[in-house]
Image (spheres, rainbow, N blue to C red):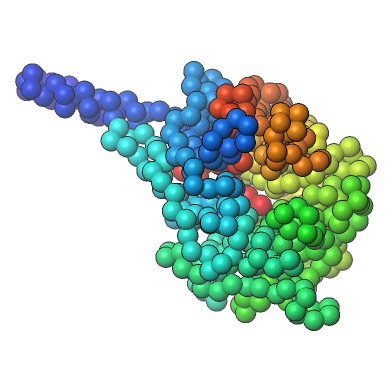
Length: 435
């Protein structure tokens, strides 16, 4: 706090406005921003007109819980922005489902009082790559790049690309593409890539599903050599078929010692339609991958549609859209999944999450409960798709991190007539390991 006591005696009536402005800015600076989140909101056809990017208060102890603090709408987009990511130097990016804006940089600044606000959205040139999904920053031959998975690739039925972008200028450096129909029998290929993770000079991307949810479904992960920026191996992760589709690997985590010194390197993969988590051991010295194996079966454990990997300093959290739970594991025991506490029971579509402390110092986890934010035919919503429509509660639930107790819920469909596509901590607070 500034000490204004010596200033007051010398000020005249003409300085009153200045005093008020300074005190307002000082007071604003004391607002807790740790519990505020960046949220991507999605228009629901029968309820709201446009998608938006917003800052929302999520502290259940705040009188502003669930309130939108700042918002920028996107009436020009048919499909919304999808996943938020902060670069190592604090710039905010989002992938997008609309071919007109498959990758964007989001302006995040402070107004004259010091309050954070969304200032705008700049869609970036992707060299024709469509339907952006996940982003990560890592090095290739000593240079740091931004890597982005594009599930729609350049538009082909068996497409999918990984875009390599200059981390400072956002310029496309290379499009990594290897279509199964063109690479030849038994050659590595990239198909509908979604999840992405890396360790040393090896990157792994998943093969999930064609963006139209009908043309094709994947069941592999592909290894990319970060020296050559080319795929070198494709590994199948196909087991149970509880809904009759290929496994559809979605998110992936390259478990590695930089996350925790006791971790044995391995690739962990969640299969959306297989309901499983797989582990692929990695020999870092030989740069070889061992046989893939199932380390968690949703069929056996009564869960379905595993999605995200998140973590803090001691635990790994995996969200399961059905019945809507987040399971937790001892980070130091990876790649083995050793339970570290009770399941956190959220809502249908449990997906992304952030971590923070409340005003009183209580450690909490906030969970976004939506898969694709598609609608429900019961509400006369034309975006209904069987099975997936039931995975959208349109809520963010806040829970005590230690016990899993639900402390509060904000229903975006009821309160704002929109769905919630993604949640991320404001200014990058909220998690340690993501994917």
